[in-house]
Image (cartoon, rainbow, N blue to C red; front, side):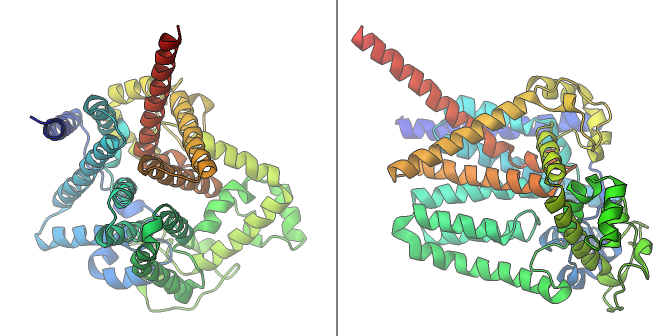
Length: 493
C-alpha cells in the first residue's frame, strides 16, 4: 500500500471514529437529560413571532430591520414543515435536533479536514476534533435554536474553501467561498460588508495569478450583500444589516455613566432624554408620545409592539429611531468619558474568555451534564470557580485562564506569521490559510468586544476551531524548531 493510500485509509477510519464518538456522546447526553430547548422560539429577540414564522414569513423577512433574514428563514421553514405534518413541539424539536446535529457534526469533520491540511497527523487531529466535539458548549448550543452552530459551520467551511482555492484555484470554488461569506452576512449581523471586502482584498492579494477571477467571483455575492443593505436603507434609513447597534453601544457606554452625569448631559442638550432610561431598550409603551412616533405601516412585523407570546417585538419600527438616538447618546458618552467605554471593553474581553457553556440560557441542559461541564471547564478551560448558576454579569474567578492564554498565544502566533510574510513579501499556501484564519479571529474578537457586552463567550465559541488550528500549527512549528536545534547541537558537538 502506498503512503497516500495509507493516509486515505487512516482518514476514513478517523472520520468513522469521530462519527461513532458523536453518536455515543449524544446518546449519553440524551440519557443524562439534555433535550432540544424550544423556549427561545417565543422569547428570543432575534427570532420572529412564531405566528409570523408560520403565516407571514416572506413579508416579515423582507421588512424585519433587527436581523438579517436567513436565520429566521430556516426557523420558519422548520415551523412550516412541522405544521404541515401535523406535528407539535415534539416534531418541531426533532426536526431542529436533526438539522443542528448535522451542522455540529459537519463542523467537527471540517475541523478535522483542516487540521489534516495544515499538516497535523491523524492521531492529534482526531484528539483535537474529538475534544471540541465532546465539549459541553457544542452539546448545549446544538440543543438550542440559536444561530451559534450555524455561524460555527459557516466559518469553518469558509476557511476550508479559501484553503482549497489557494491550493487549486477554480471559479466554482471561488464562487462557493464568496457565496458562503454572503450567506454568513445574511445570517449574523456581527458580519458586515467591511469583513467581506477585507477578505476579498486579501484573497486577491495572495492569489496573484487569479486576481481578476477572484473579483469576478466576488461580484455577485457582493451585489447580494448590497441588496440587503439597500433594503434596510429603504425600510429604516440605515446602511446596516441590523438596527440594534445603538442598543449594544449603550450597554458599553451610556448606561455605565452614573445617573447624575447623564442628567447633566441631557440638560445641556448633548444627550437625548432616552439616556435617562436605565435599559438599553425599554418596553414599547415607555416611548409612546414622548420619544418617537411612527405611523402605522400595515406590515405586522413593523407594527406589532409585542409578539403573540407576550414578549417585546424588537422589530417594531419605532425601535429603529430609538436605536439611532441610543447610538447618538453612546457616541457622546464615548467622547466625553472614554475611560468608561474602555473599561467596558476590557470587561467584554474578560467575558470573552469565559467557558462558552457559562451562558444563562443554557442552564437547564447544562445542569443535566454538570459533572462533565465542570471537568471540562476546569481541565480544558482552566476556570478557577465553576458557576452553578451562570449569569451575564462578570465574576473574575469564572474566566477560563487556559482559554485566555491559548487565545493570546494563538493571536500572537498569527500576527507573527503575518509580519514575517509581509517582511519577506512571500506567502506559502499554509501561511496564507493561517493569516486568513487570523483575520477572521481578529475581526470577530475585536468587533464583537467593541460593540457587545454580556454574551461575549457565546460568539467566541464559533472561533474555537480556528483558534485550535492556529494553536496546533504553532505547537508543530515550536516542536520542529526545538528538533532542529537539537540536531544542530549534535552535529556541531
